[in-house]
Length: 475
Image (cartoon, rainbow, N blue to C red; front, side, top):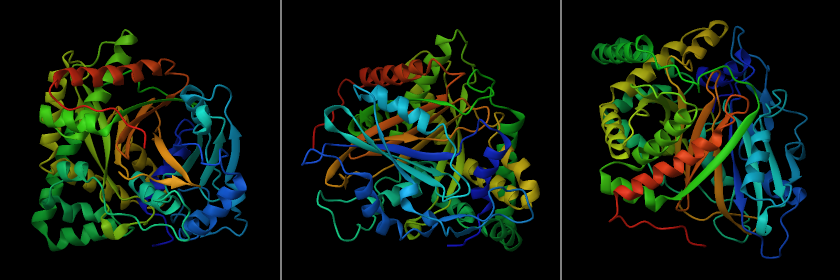
């Protein structure tokens, strides 16, 4: 694992440097059942439990060599001589009654603050005061250190698979769900996608082009197609693409994974298609509630795509590419919205979009650090997409911390400049949670989005009366 940031890792630092409203931290809130003895762990106990586990991940005790990018070389990771795990884990108590509303309001504030770039780029908070004796841990990690799928692998290291503490943390189990990757990126695209998997990805891409001119031609055509579709034919303007501040709002909606699977099976789509359809309903209701006519061509979603393989477990940094999916927010009929989403994702399945996105990332990586920031921002411009929707498959087995069952995870996605709303979809132990984060000032009506998610889910349920739908059962 190289100590120098890759161009893709540095991109997330650059996005913050160019706009104060951009906050490039990922994370989530893990909600635990009450412990058997009735008392949640203390900060000291959490620190003692995590310290030996985090010792296996050197980046969590390292800082950036420079807090800024844009010089002649990328920053690299160096040991932080002042590192003390106790400086990264705080203790808070929710105000009464300690329900989901209070937890989401607290989380909105937690994810409104940037990480200190002079220290290791992560924080945690032990949260008490939840209803029913539950407790929680919120974690925040800068996107330059790890991506969404990588953070799931880290979670395996930090949590237990049994209620009793183990002397050594468990090895990550095999992948639980490769649906998004297998559906949207065929095997024949993989040699090109692999170029994004390391700091020398761009150099490998150049060598590959020289040795395999036919691949290079196909790659160039895919890039041209992507640029024509997503640059010359820009994403439509909407009220969710405006300058934003640094304070956030946060809402969550949870649904059994079995429901999404049953709906997808009955309607002829994937779980990811169902999730995109539900998000489309949320966006539609948000726009209509503002008296805004949804754009006829739909909104364009950026869908980050995992390209790491099993050999890269616990490899930090980013191993992602990008796909762009059109969301038919102007369509009033739920069945037709779903049909159009399935058609759109099926078109992406031919691999051209994935290859084009990878080629564009490779080209920006060739730019020297002093020029890269300008190109990096173009990758996250509103001309390319309106909203980020990331779908990360999590572990489908129960996990524990300090003897308490992990009940639910509220995921959080970063917001880039001029993108007021983002959605993270995360599945864990049979439950899927939509975490919706938004700019506080421009999106005071975020509850309309959450209501639209629930409405969209209900509409899809009504289209599948013969599907076996279940509600989550206590463990």
